[in-house]
Structures are given as structure tokens and as C-alpha cells.
Image 1 (cartoon, rainbow, N blue to C red):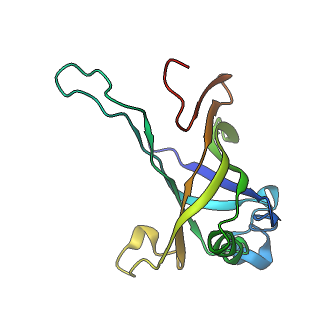
Image 2: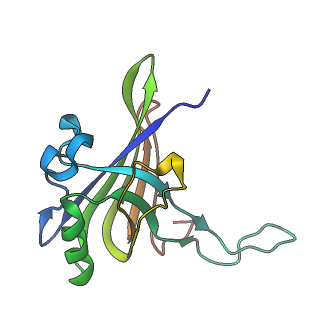
Length: 173
């Protein structure tokens, strides 16, 4: 059976401070507001890819890991113009946090977190799904935000495990 995964975005900038402040307030998202996640943007999609150049025959690496930008998809909310401002000003984002939740025994459980440090917005795309895309017809105005970063930490909260990487650091330290 398919279980719904929920995710929320928090962005703290060096210039603007908490960019996602009141992002999920009623004034910001109307009927989709979530008081318990008031200072977070509601996410609809998350994508992140990391690769390492490698020899196709041996599998041995031939270079440093490549961290591609983290891409999130969110509805327009109060934070949307502020994210644009951060993009235009090339604002350094001290911390970008994506908190993942799942349903466990009927209770919403925070089980996974991805944290980006010293991030920047490197692309913003805005789009509206067609009415024929019925599974997403309730999502009127969407934006994709792409974040590059210096550090990444991934934490499985409920299992107490963590992995991290710093851009440009070799695998051997």
C-alpha cells in the first residue's frame, strides 16, 4: 500500500534571515495552511543526484564526487518572492533544511532530514500543471528551486544514523 510522504522546507539566509517565516500560514497558502509547520514551505517533490566519475570496467573512481543541485518543488507561498530575492542577490543561505515525515501507526513522524550549509539558489523555474494532469490538478502554481551547497548532512532521525559530505573533499579525507 502506498504511504504518503510529507516534506517541508526551511531556509535561513545571511541577509533576509528566516526566508520561510509564515510560509504555511493561512494568509500565505489559504486552505492548505498547516499551523504546526507555519515557518516551513510545503514540498511536493524532491530530487537530488550525486555521482562519481568512474571506470566503467573496474568501477574504480576516476575523480571527485559531483554534487548536483538539490531541486525541490513547492507551491507559491509567502517565501516565493523572498526566494527570488535571494536568487537575484546571490544571497548565501546559511542553512536549508528539508524535513521528511511519514505516517507511522496513524501518527505523522519526522523520520529523515537533509541539511544543506552555505547554499545558494542557482535556478528557479515556475510552472502550472495542465488541467489534464488530474493527480496534480489541485496544485495551481508551482516553483522548482535548485540549491547548490558546500556541505550536506543526511540524518535518519528515527534510526539515529547520519552521513555527510563537504564539496571538494576527497573520499580519503
